[in-house]
Length: 165
Length: 199
Image 1: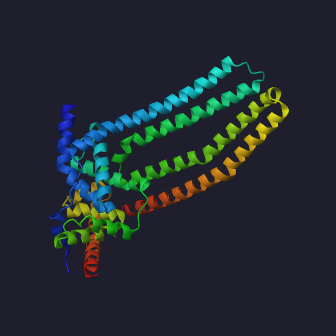
Image 2: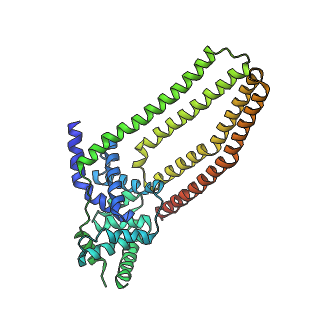
Image 3: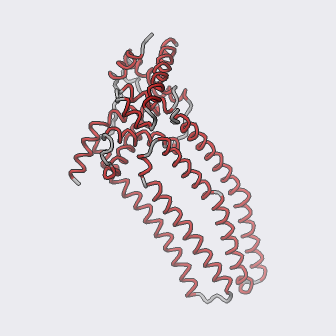
C-alpha cells in the first residue's frame, strides 16, 4: 500500500501538469480541466495493478487522460465556443499582462480545433515524442505526422487571425 | 504574425497550473469509494426491504385468490430485475479496463453503453410498466370480492387514470427527452470517432 502510494505520488508529480494542459486544451476552462485531471488520476490509482510495462507510464496515463476527456461529453453539454472563449479570458484577468493575453489567445485558438486535434496539438506543444502520441491516439505514426503537419498549420493560422482581431 | 515555433515557446512559458494537489486526489479516492459503496448499500437495503415485505405479505396475509399471489410474484420479479440491471451497469461503468483501450475503441464502448442505457430507460421501462399494470389488475380480482362495490369502482378508476397519465404524459415526455439526449450524445461520439480514424 505504501509502495503503491509512493509510486502514485511520483506519477502525479511527474505527469499532473502535462495532463492538466491536455485537459485544459480540450475543455477550454480551468475548472473542468482540474476536474478531469483529478478524475484521470483517480482512474490511474484504480488501474495501477493493470499496468503491464508494455509502454511507458506517461503513455499509459495520457491514454487514460484522453479517454477521460472523450467521455466528458457524456456528462457535460458542450457549451458554445463563445462562452468557452469568454471563460478562457476570465481565467487570465487577475494579472492581464501581454504574455497572459497571448496564452489566453492560444487556448482560445486551440478551442477552435476539432477534439482530436486539440488532444494531439497539446501533446506536440508539450514535446511528447511522436511514437508516444501515435500510441496514445491509436493511429499509425505516418498518419500522425500528416495530421500534426496539418494541425500546426491550422493552429498558427487561427492564432494569427485571432491576434489580428 | 507568429510561427509555430513561437507559439510553442509561448505554450512552454505559460502560467496555467493545476490547483489540485496530490493529497486532494487521495482524499477524493477514499471518499469516492465510500460514496459508491454507500449508494449501492442503501439501494440494496431498500430493494431487500421491499422484497421481504412482499414475501411477508405472501405468508402472513391469507389472500383468497391465486391471482394476488401471482401479482406479488410479478412485483418481486420487477423489483429484482430493476435492481440487478442497475447493479450490472454500475459494475460495467466501474470496470475501467475500457479506459486503457484505443480512443476509437473506447468511443465504441461508450456508444454501446449509452444505447444500452437508453434501451433500459425506454423500451424496458415500458415492459416494466406493463408488468406492474398486470400485477395491479390481478390484485384487482381479489379486491373485487373484498371491497364494497363503489369503493372498488372508485379505486379502479383512480388507478387506470393514474396509469394513463403516467403512460401518455410523463412516459411520452421522458422517452422523447431521453431519445433527443441520446441522439445528441451518439452524434457527438460518432463525430469524434471519425476524427480518430486511422486514414
